[in-house]
Image (cartoon, rainbow, N blue to C red; front, side, top):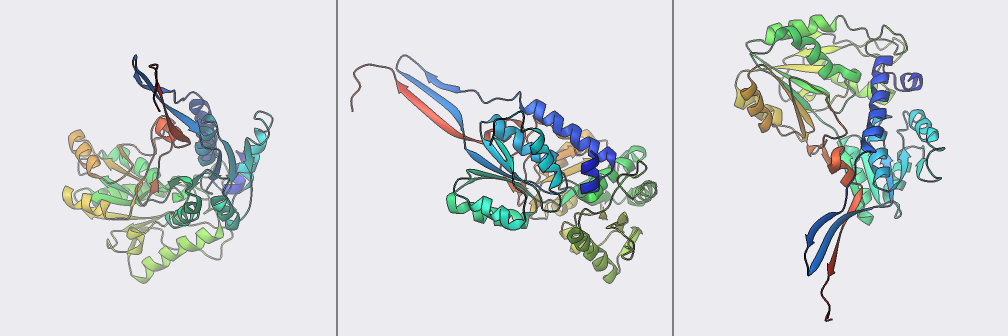
Length: 394
């Protein structure tokens, strides 16, 4: 945990969550299997469908959850009978190198390896003819490069990419419990989360109260050194991302958008610390709403009609996750089923399981992770037929 905090910046509690989750994934995925399926077994014919390993899998891991998202790839790939080469992010290599080092006494030599390097190394892996599959988590733009690079040898790919997840707050929401839940939906891991709620659509009847409650709760959150036990949110992880996030602050200021909280980065202060920032009802076509900042700056947006907010929530090239908040169960489910997202949470968020499929719609990804669907992504399908009767003819 100390290594994860010092390298990634997240507070110890968040680091503990990631390590505990990684342990759970290893244990649970180890219990999963894809047994042979008997399609037909008669006096005349036997037909069996089975799964076979692919070979060498390249697991390309991002910097926001370096351990957990590595395990999401390593565990099913090994369980399916493959070997794995892990490529950590160049921004945060040590955690994944340590993870691979720790298992060397458990696995046979060469079954799980790690290669650390820059983006050029990633291209070498995705182009290499002996790599059978690439499992990648990262931005949509980089995912497109991976896809192009892997196409030369028709590699299998699993791409878990970006998102611009909407959170829709209904007018009958429980205001007492909403503020902390909605805050962490948006700002967990400092907003450096593919599934962070990046657009908060709040019904006009409760908008002012939700904005004020969320702002009041946010003021209690401590941003600082992740090694300090009193810290709730750490810094942005790297300088490149810090500069990208700062662009959204500059754009909001240049257009005169209102800040409900925050809005100014102290760029002379040491470290890549960014203040928790809520932008009060910016235009739907603003950069902050249309793009993925991947940092602690989030727009609050008004709505009053169910059809309208669903259309606005779906008006994005991404479709990773979404959440809906309220008390009318039927209305919540009706809205959830109309959202174009791989995972839709109702009155909760960021609930994952090794047995629950995770996949993106639209430009948020290709393929699936977790569950037996995710395990099957690391296999070839093979059908074997046997004609049992004698006197076969050619």
